[in-house]
Image (cartoon, rainbow, N blue to C red):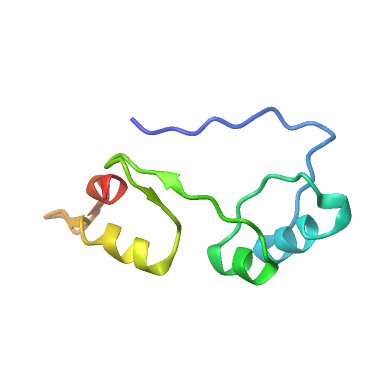
Length: 91
């Protein structure tokens, strides 16, 4: 199944509250070299570079609303009304 791995927290880590706090921190001189993730709109407003991610279908996609809309076309609703998003990640 899917899982995430996170590095051990140490003194070099800096926590910020919410996307606005994260975007504000990494946009300062002392945040240079920081690697982070924020919502796409915050990255655009802050002038951050945005990466394209290689999906399972072999395409590099940017996290735009258009890409999300295309991906969500593969979402399915199960009989118990839960979501099956397996196809979204492939799309």
